[in-house]
Amino acid sequence: MALIPATILTGFLGAGKTTVLKRILTEAHGQKIAVIENEFGEENIDSDILVSDTTEQIIQMSNGCICCTIREDLRATLQDLAEKKRKGELDFDRVVIETTGLADPGPVAQTFFMDDEVAESYLLDAVLTLVDAKHAPEQLNERQEARRQVGFADQIFISKSELVSPQDLDALQHRLKHMNPRAPQQTVHFGEVAIKDFFDLRGFNLNAKLDIDPDFLNADPHDHDHDHAHHDHGEACNHPSHAHGDHSGHHHHVDDDVKSFVFKSERAFDPAKLEDFLGAIVNIYGPRMLRYKGVLYMKDTERKVIFQGVHQLMGSDLGPAWAPGETRNSKLVFIGIDLPKDILLQGMEQALV
Image (cartoon, rainbow, N blue to C red; front, side):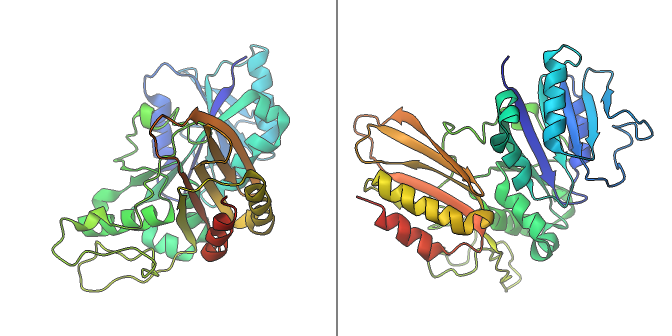
């Protein structure tokens, strides 16, 4: 049986996850979707989608979608759904897990790698994070869960952008980009997300292209069309969340603990040295490492090595061959909470041939 694609939908309280979900569930796309609400025993908020007074955990909807609320182990629910699908008791094409607004998506994502039974049935496609433009600046300042959700995202949807000024939206996008340069951002109005932007994004696929712009720290494309001086986000910029779109004459010096940085080199890695270093780093900083991903140039191989990890779990895979004439280089992005950038960069440097 083919693996069932799974999508994790996260976002802080009130960001509009339910609205987006309803839209996805009710659109005529011909797909049968199983939705798992990861509510951790809170009162069920989505009585419109899920019939809340039923004792039955799984509800079959009229358009063939299935909804279930889990108040216990996600693993058990995923296994249960996969088994019902195998036996022909339930018919669905894919799974969407809506996490509670206070959840760190990390452990949810790890379920797909750590549990063999789940890994044999499901393929984690992507983590989608919804950010509320109006309340995000405050939430990101005050709540680590909100920052983690951004750091974990493969795709960021910004809701309620019509409630803020273009400058404030620009400042928020800028800040999100510094926290997570790998995730494309898109503004959505009233939950209107196209299916193609929601499913089959291959965010967790090791062979998916590394969708970061490694130069985002060096030059700021936002600044071309402003008349003030060009900012350089080199080492001198200590505050990755400068609100550059704020033209009221001051910058917000909010220093987010979730940050990203990129390592680049045209020298090859020594596989043994790199493995030792990464093993040690993950051992010490694993819980603080949200996502890390890269394309590596390794000694003695004609193929690219694609590498990625979530918290303490990391994996690598052989990618395509280096093309004739292509510059061989390594590019890695690390996204985490208060990671020691200098130690990581120095260690990577020392693992080169």
